[in-house]
Length: 128
Image (tube, rainbow, N blue to C red; front, side, top):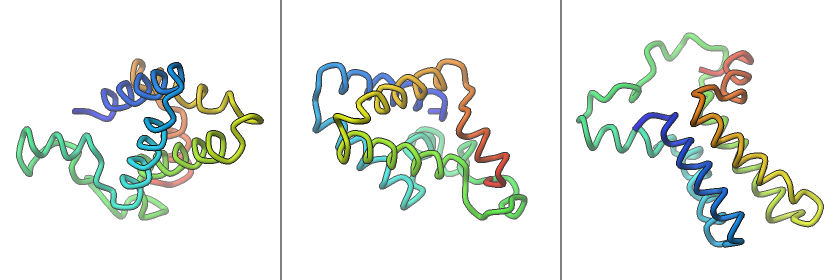
Protein backbone atom coordinates (compact mmCIF):
# COMPACT_ATOMS: atom_id res chain seq x y z
CA UNK A 1 0.00 0.00 0.00
CA UNK A 2 1.36 3.38 -0.92
CA UNK A 3 1.11 6.60 1.07
CA UNK A 4 -1.18 7.93 -1.66
CA UNK A 5 -3.69 5.10 -1.23
CA UNK A 6 -3.50 5.38 2.53
CA UNK A 7 -4.21 9.13 2.40
CA UNK A 8 -7.22 8.42 0.21
CA UNK A 9 -8.54 5.95 2.80
CA UNK A 10 -7.78 8.41 5.61
CA UNK A 11 -9.73 11.18 3.90
CA UNK A 12 -12.73 8.94 3.21
CA UNK A 13 -12.66 7.56 6.77
CA UNK A 14 -12.54 11.02 8.31
CA UNK A 15 -15.29 12.38 6.05
CA UNK A 16 -17.57 9.45 6.94
CA UNK A 17 -16.86 9.94 10.66
CA UNK A 18 -17.60 13.66 10.44
CA UNK A 19 -20.71 13.27 8.28
CA UNK A 20 -22.32 10.67 10.53
CA UNK A 21 -20.99 12.41 13.69
CA UNK A 22 -19.28 9.32 15.08
CA UNK A 23 -16.89 10.81 17.61
CA UNK A 24 -15.26 7.48 18.52
CA UNK A 25 -14.03 7.04 14.94
CA UNK A 26 -12.30 10.40 15.09
CA UNK A 27 -10.73 9.60 18.47
CA UNK A 28 -9.40 6.34 17.00
CA UNK A 29 -8.09 8.27 13.97
CA UNK A 30 -6.23 10.72 16.22
CA UNK A 31 -4.87 7.83 18.30
CA UNK A 32 -3.58 5.97 15.24
CA UNK A 33 -1.92 9.11 13.93
CA UNK A 34 -0.24 9.80 17.26
CA UNK A 35 0.91 6.17 17.48
CA UNK A 36 2.35 6.35 13.95
CA UNK A 37 4.05 9.66 14.73
CA UNK A 38 5.55 8.42 17.99
CA UNK A 39 6.80 5.06 16.74
CA UNK A 40 7.21 5.71 12.98
CA UNK A 41 5.43 2.38 12.37
CA UNK A 42 3.29 3.58 9.49
CA UNK A 43 0.41 1.45 8.27
CA UNK A 44 1.44 1.54 4.56
CA UNK A 45 4.95 0.31 5.41
CA UNK A 46 3.61 -2.44 7.67
CA UNK A 47 1.20 -3.62 4.97
CA UNK A 48 3.96 -3.51 2.31
CA UNK A 49 6.29 -5.54 4.53
CA UNK A 50 3.56 -8.10 5.16
CA UNK A 51 2.81 -8.39 1.46
CA UNK A 52 6.30 -8.19 -0.07
CA UNK A 53 8.68 -9.07 2.78
CA UNK A 54 11.41 -7.05 4.47
CA UNK A 55 12.68 -5.53 1.22
CA UNK A 56 9.51 -3.54 0.54
CA UNK A 57 9.91 -0.31 -1.35
CA UNK A 58 9.75 2.77 0.84
CA UNK A 59 10.56 0.89 4.01
CA UNK A 60 13.86 2.71 4.54
CA UNK A 61 14.95 6.11 3.31
CA UNK A 62 17.68 6.07 0.67
CA UNK A 63 19.99 8.55 2.38
CA UNK A 64 19.06 9.30 6.00
CA UNK A 65 21.67 12.05 6.43
CA UNK A 66 20.58 14.12 3.42
CA UNK A 67 18.24 16.43 5.36
CA UNK A 68 18.61 19.21 7.84
CA UNK A 69 16.51 17.38 10.42
CA UNK A 70 16.69 13.65 11.15
CA UNK A 71 12.92 13.49 10.96
CA UNK A 72 10.66 12.45 8.09
CA UNK A 73 8.13 14.77 6.47
CA UNK A 74 5.49 12.01 6.58
CA UNK A 75 5.96 11.71 10.33
CA UNK A 76 5.67 15.46 10.75
CA UNK A 77 2.48 15.41 8.66
CA UNK A 78 0.94 12.88 11.04
CA UNK A 79 1.85 15.03 14.05
CA UNK A 80 0.34 18.10 12.38
CA UNK A 81 -2.90 16.33 11.41
CA UNK A 82 -3.31 14.80 14.88
CA UNK A 83 -2.63 18.17 16.53
CA UNK A 84 -5.07 20.00 14.24
CA UNK A 85 -7.78 17.44 14.86
CA UNK A 86 -7.18 17.40 18.60
CA UNK A 87 -7.34 21.19 18.92
CA UNK A 88 -10.29 21.67 16.57
CA UNK A 89 -12.40 18.62 17.42
CA UNK A 90 -11.71 18.08 21.12
CA UNK A 91 -10.63 21.44 22.51
CA UNK A 92 -12.73 23.97 20.56
CA UNK A 93 -15.39 22.12 18.52
CA UNK A 94 -17.88 25.01 18.33
CA UNK A 95 -15.28 27.58 17.36
CA UNK A 96 -13.21 25.53 14.87
CA UNK A 97 -15.88 23.21 13.43
CA UNK A 98 -14.56 23.63 9.86
CA UNK A 99 -10.95 22.51 10.50
CA UNK A 100 -11.65 18.72 10.67
CA UNK A 101 -13.63 19.00 7.44
CA UNK A 102 -10.74 20.88 5.81
CA UNK A 103 -8.23 18.26 6.99
CA UNK A 104 -10.42 15.43 5.69
CA UNK A 105 -10.87 17.06 2.29
CA UNK A 106 -7.16 17.83 1.99
CA UNK A 107 -6.25 14.22 2.85
CA UNK A 108 -8.76 13.00 0.27
CA UNK A 109 -7.39 15.36 -2.39
CA UNK A 110 -3.81 14.38 -1.52
CA UNK A 111 -4.79 10.76 -2.02
CA UNK A 112 -6.43 11.47 -5.35
CA UNK A 113 -3.76 13.76 -6.82
CA UNK A 114 -0.62 12.40 -5.09
CA UNK A 115 0.26 15.99 -4.18
CA UNK A 116 0.28 16.80 -0.48
CA UNK A 117 1.08 20.47 0.17
CA UNK A 118 2.08 19.83 3.79
CA UNK A 119 4.62 17.15 2.85
CA UNK A 120 6.03 19.43 0.15
CA UNK A 121 6.28 22.26 2.69
CA UNK A 122 7.98 20.06 5.29
CA UNK A 123 10.48 18.76 2.72
CA UNK A 124 11.19 22.36 1.73
CA UNK A 125 11.82 23.16 5.40
CA UNK A 126 14.44 20.41 5.59
CA UNK A 127 12.68 17.26 6.72
CA UNK A 128 13.43 14.01 4.88
